[in-house]
Image 1 (cartoon, helix red, strand yellow):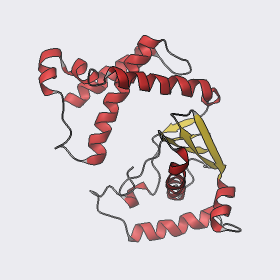
Image 2 (cartoon, rainbow, N blue to C red; image 1 turned 90 degrees about the horizontal axis):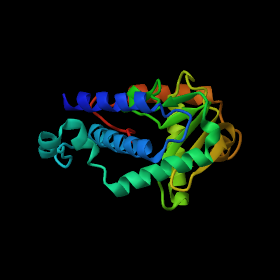
Image 3 (tube, rainbow, N blue to C red; image 1 turned 180 degrees about the vertical axis):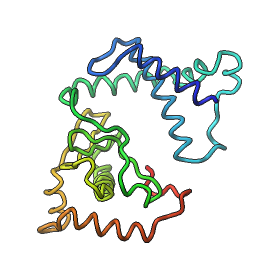
Image 4 (spheres, rainbow, N blue to C red; image 1 turned 90 degrees about the vertical axis):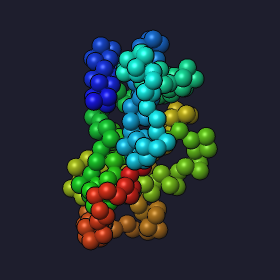
Length: 218
């Protein structure tokens, strides 16, 4: 399988580089940037379910081999952008290093809405990552998205105490304590989170979409 071949190569690269907890030299950073671009292409296929507009590098795979063909899909400009985003995050969010993290977390209620996975939970902070030119315009939609994920965590698996948006282009993290945010939206004293989750679970179970649905999968 093409996917397995690519993923095995990417895992081998991670074992070689061992990137956790440090800023990489440019050569290693650029190779991982290419790998991230390839992973993004596969995720795009999974989420869009649109094979027509999603083209694999068939001819290049015959000429150069599967892994090299995929890695070369990332243009120099793309690699440069990804490297800058990575280094900026390392510089601005160094306090993230060493903290407990769950990547691409799913929730107890994810299946009830056709699949919902967030970006990451970092020590009780549910964080959404955005590359927005105008951050202010992205905030309202992102906040409601984060609250939906929080409500789908029926069993409080992640102990979410706050939500935040990391604007990767600007290197800025904006956070809201969950209780304060819910109070502001409720315009007063918010209902207990456990009650809201129980109510959402009851509604979601009744309205659960077919397995093929991709609602909330963004």
